[in-house]
Structure formats: structure tokens, C-alpha cells
Length: 136
Image 1 (cartoon, helix red, strand yellow):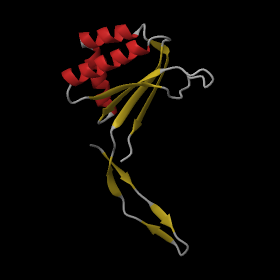
Image 2 (cartoon, helix red, strand yellow):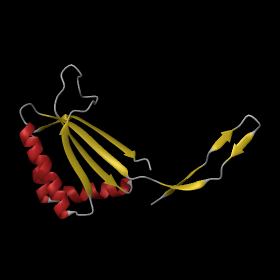
Image 3 (cartoon, rainbow, N blue to C red):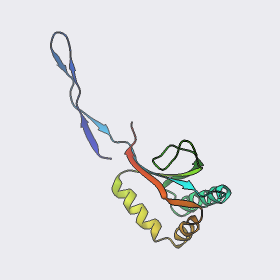
């Protein structure tokens, strides 16, 4: 893992006190996508979520992917009219590994078939994505 240097400077009443720089391991790189589920497609969404996670666990045992259904607040969510959503989440050591994993999945015929099934279940226009480093 890459290390980052974290330096802390503390200012006291009598003067400045500094701590030495120390390496800090970076947390996992997390990619999340939240998409609205089309009305009446909750059961299909849950089934596809299970199928997607099963496929990744079966074919790519080192990968960390999860899919959940629920409700989250996003830019595409109207608080007065909440809708059911799917949350896709992946964890990787770094952004490059996430990109490599995405390319591998897009080359997997079974995964692409699941993606096509999602077209009638998910409102892809509503999808929002976030990427961040987990805190350690």
C-alpha cells in the first residue's frame, strides 16, 4: 500500500510544539454507485443484486463487491417522493485496480448479460457515483 506522510503541528500557549512526521497506511479505495429502481421492479432488483454479487464472488474471489437495496439521499432523490434504490459498492487498493476490475467485468459475458437485464430495472439517468478513501 502507498504511504502518506501526516504531520501534525500543535500550538501551545508557551510556543509551538511539533510532532514528527509518521507514515500512515491509506485506506481502501471505495467506489459507490446509487441508482433509482424503476417502479414495481423491487423484486427483480433484489434478484439481480444477488446474481451480480454471486457472479463476482464465484468468478473473482479476491474482489470485494456488494449490492444493497434501500433508500439513500442523492441528488436524484426527491425527499417528498422517495424511491427505492440500489447501492453498488466496490473496495480496491487503489483507483487503478478499480479501473482494471471494471475492464475485466466488462469483458465477462455473464456480467454483461446481467447489465443488460438491469436496463429495465434501474433508472440509469438517476445514478450518482462517489469515490473515496476509507479512513483507518
